[in-house]
Each structure stands twice: as structure tokens, then as C-alpha cells.
Length: 216
Image 1 (cartoon, rainbow, N blue to C red):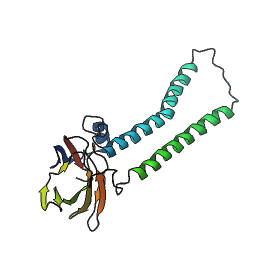
Image 2: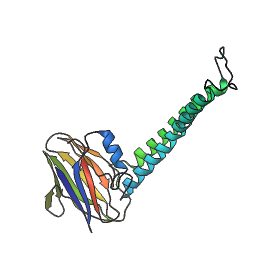
Image 3: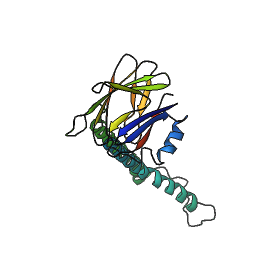
Image 4: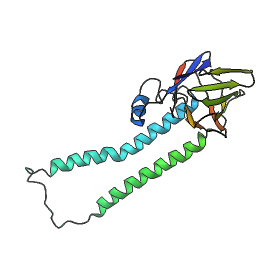
């Protein structure tokens, strides 16, 4: 199944099937056309959050790996300079490092996530002088229906939106729950039967962008 959407001038979003596993999706995210190659303001902001989060987590992962290798090398059997302290039980400095660094990492990550979750609220309109294009999205069995209420047209598996203009998506489902996700533009959002969810996206440049139906 391939779901396709076109951004006028002409950026194209193709909504295809998500990989079988989240690990595979994470590996593919680094390739061209993934979350690390954003083509809109929402995608760019989400990439910044991702990279900042990874950098903060590396602040504890890298020293831990280095320390583990360093301890293994220093306390090797042939190193006669290593002090053997069989009665050692406590070190205030080690306790300070072991507890303070994870706490700081959690605080920084919490701040990034809290700020990002408010700035990138999918229901929050994007800052623009242009009126958003209204698009109604309906997930069906094996396909997507895109309705342009102001233009009185609709399309199946193909979405055409203008480059440089915000798009307001109103999403629902006429079947089971699904998820609408265009990695380069940002913001995965669920579609559920009996309710409507909102999403605001924008493509800065014309192009073709592949999307994913996360619940296929």
C-alpha cells in the first residue's frame, strides 16, 4: 500500500507503510527523507529536540563507557600500581557524581520535552501571514481519503498542498485507529473513529515527501 500526497509547486507527501519494527524505523530515520532531513518548521523543531536530547543523554552514556573501559584497564591483573582496598565501602565524591549527573540529565530532558510539547502542540496554528489550507483526512481500510472542503475536491492516497503555506489537517477514521505521519514535515497524529484530531504542518520547499501509516 502506498499513500501519496503532493505539496503544490510541487512538494509531494507519499504516505507509505511504516516499517515492521520501531528499530528499523529508527535506523531509517537517519537516511535522506527521514526526521533528520526536515522540510518544514515543525520537522526542523522536532529534529532540534531530538538532537538536543541525544546530546544530553550522551553526557552520561559516553563517560560511563569510558569509565568502564578505564576501570577494566587500570585494575587489570598485571597492573601492580592499582591499589587493592578490600575494606572500601563509601566515597562521597563518587556518590555526588553518580547521583548528580543523572538528575541533571533528567532535568534538562524534562525541560526540553516540556517546552517542545507546548511549542509543537499539533492543535496550535503555525505562525504565518497566510491563511491555512483546510484539509480533511479520513483513514480508510488500506487507503487515505483527503478532502479539500474549500475547493470541493477530494483525492485518494494523494495529497496536494502549497509549499510555504500552513496546512490545517482535521483527521478522523472511518475504520480502525491509524496514524498519519510525514517524517520530513513532522508530527505523527492518530486518527480514530468517532472523533477528530487536529494537526498543523507546512512544507517550506517544493518536493516529494514519503509518509507512513504507522498502524498498517
